[in-house]
Image 1 (tube, rainbow, N blue to C red):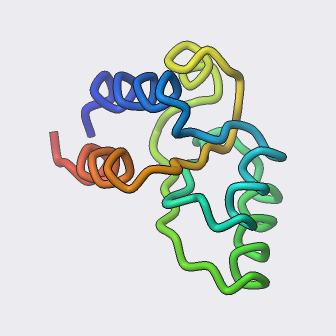
Image 2: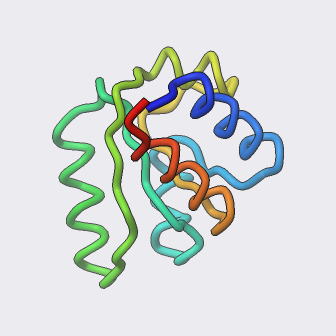
Length: 105
């Protein structure tokens, strides 16, 4: 994974208004079916991850979930908002971010 590219695209998506950052905003995006993918920081709690897993099952939502090796502090630096969970709410940003996350580099 190319961390700098990931941070660049997360920052770009944030400026475009295509991210929901933080617990409440992410829950709203998932329940409202706006979220195209979920990203958790590597240092978030297992309880938070389980909460979203239950939420997805309860509302019958199947979106990709990633836990890349990035911390809450790194997300704060890239996006200007301290959050452990992010949803990407745009299909094109989602595709590009997934390709970055799945790259071998």
